[in-house]
Length: 231
Image (cartoon, rainbow, N blue to C red):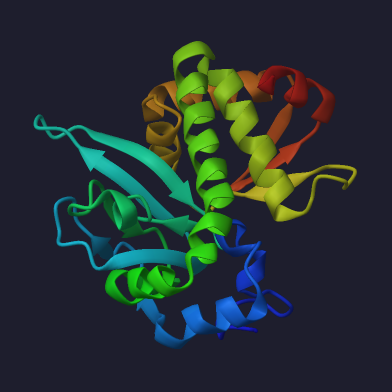
C-alpha cells in the first residue's frame, strides 16, 4: 500500500508505529486518513486546540514546541518524515498539549481520532501491535532529556549531526555530510541551549577539524572524533 507523497517504495509499514500491522489493517486505516499540506512556517495546531487526531509526517520537517507563561519557547521534538506526532492525547484524552509548526513545505497524513478509536474497538490487535511503536517514541524522548541534562553542548551537537548524517544516507561516504534544513535557532532550542552557545559549539568542532561548514552544509572531516564526542 503506497500513499501519495511517500517516496517510491515507502509505505505505511515503514512507519515504526505501524510496522507490525498487516496489509489489511493498514488498508482500513488509510481509508479514513486525510492528506494535509502546509506551507513553510504554518501552524499545524496550537497548544490547547481541540484534539482531532494524530499525524504521520510524509514530507518536510515539523517543530513540536511549548511556550512558557513568560514566552520562552522549548522545542520538544523535531519531526522527520515517516514519524508520528500528536499521538499521545489519542489515548490520554484532552487537547493538544503542545504546538506544532511546519519548518518547510510539509505534507502529513492526519489520522482522525474518532475513526481510529472506533477501528481499534473492533480490532484490538491493532492497538497491541502499536504499543511497540509508542515505546520507541518514549525511549527517544527520555534519551533526549538525558542528553540535555548530562551532556555538554558540543557533545549534544555531535550526536545531533551524527543522527542527521545517518538519516541523510551519507554516513559511509569518504566525507559524510548533511545539509541543515532547519534554522540554527530551532536546533539550539531542540538541544536545550541558545543560538550563541550553539554557534560556539560549531566553532569548536571546526577548530578541532572534526567538521567543516560550507553555507548550510556540514561536512564531517573526522568521523571517529565526532562519534567519540557524541557518546
